[in-house]
Structures are given as C-alpha cells and as structure tokens.
Amino acid sequence: MSNMKKIIQFSISKGQNFYTAEAIGLPIFTQAATLDDLMVNIKEATDLYLENEDLSEFGFSARPSVLVNFEMPQYA
Picture 1 (cartoon, rainbow, N blue to C red):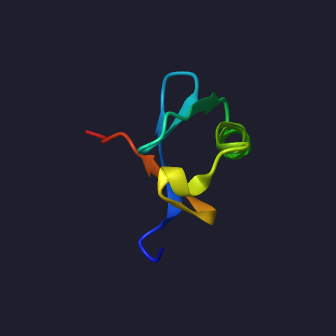
Picture 2: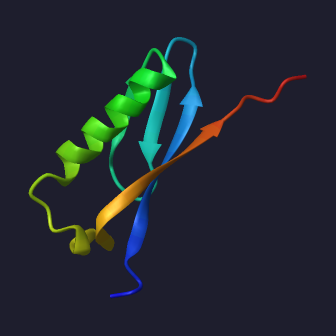
C-alpha cells in the first residue's frame, strides 16, 4: 500500500472577518478569527470527520499529516 496518501491538504484564505480552511479532496471546512485558532479548528474538524473511519477507504495511510497552504491576496 505504498500509494497511500500521507498528507491531508488544506487551503487557507482570509475573508473580511475570518480565516477559512477547506480540505482538498475531503468535505472538511472550518473558520476562525486568527490563524492560531484556525490551526486548532483544522485539527479538531479533521479528527471529528475521520473519527471511527477506516482511513484506507479515503486513500490515506494510518497516520497522515496535515499540510496547509495560505492564499495571500494580490496587492496592486
């Protein structure tokens, strides 16, 4: 099973009032007022979504890491 994914990837963007995080390839979404709080929420949302699930059914190894990408708005 060497083709199992080892990383759950999130895309982070900054809205007007909140940072939002959306998993790529999984229906996990969360938001927070600060990046620190968002990191906590990402872990919590991921744990809750995958609780009691067989990760191999999602194509993931037993202990995947979380990778976050932050989208910075382009400045003129």
